[in-house]
Image (cartoon, rainbow, N blue to C red; front, side, top):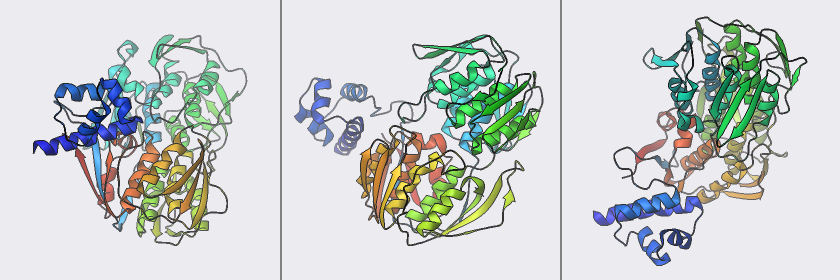
Length: 508
């Protein structure tokens, strides 16, 4: 039994070292020992003390053994299984976090229906709770109630939780109406390379917000003013548009926002603002006209719509496992380009008549995907602002292209690192060639094979790896899946409900 534990610990150390990109010699140097000793440890052939385990964990910035609390969650995937039946799409992660930030605009009680119970939401709730906002799950944990205090306590903010989510940056828009001076920790989230916050600063400066950044903290001072002309966003980004909307909502006047994103989460935020009494013209276009109100004090009940990126994830799961699967409650307006591309590749689908989401505005369909012989697309796969192919859906085309005959060029121009993470599919039998940090060439079809590997630190590439494991014959292990839990609620359990075999487990 002791030998078995040594082997398991050795594998954990090896995986953590490889995930850090270190050689055995580099780890040995950090520990002040020899490369041969590290080799024996990783093979389970050397006794190892808790002190040494702690030193290794510190050197690799990785928890090797958890004492007194649960360690990281992992997934064990038995692949090669066909999916069948039907599965519902959950509410939008990105809409839910935007609405949680938007609840700071309201002095009254906000109820959000069917909020995704995911790590990204939990981090925002931790931050809200730390500054005095009362939140609780109601209706058997399905819905969320938010009641703000008369005065927010920004000095007590949970900085650790704030730094684990990029969504914290959307506190700026609401807070500039509530406080003359405040501090926020730097935004965190996925490791996707440099993502400048300057477009947010440019937009919010028009409302009198001045930001200086020092030692991991944004220092904000507000000298409220009215935008004298339309705000032109320098980036048609989702969160920068949402921040501008949040600032405009309580600006007592009319604000015009140009080059605005019209993506799904932005539309949901606009619908929510209308429920708060803010008039928004141009929803679904790149020019938004916001008729703000000085004070918002209403009890509001709102249902965010379904998540098109989760719908794409489930569609990709059906494609790579060669399954027939019905995906219910698909927000079709935000999937039409993706489906058009896939149908050109040869994907066989059926869709139901359209029906309204619970917000009364978003159009939904039930989509059935069938096993298909796919051909690589003639044109490259690349994202564009809505109504183009969704930026977050691009990684799923890597797995789909790997199932198609021929070569597919994927150009992920938005993020610095995400295309690099897609090459993790090569460890599962994929044939992906990285041309530069933004472009990857995918050769298909692929004979997937099982593997054990660390989860990529970016949400969508992590799910893509999981889907490939579902397609691979044999048993795979995906370690430390916190990043998946950031964006998906009970994904393993839900995939199991339609025929997958995925087990969650933790180490020692």
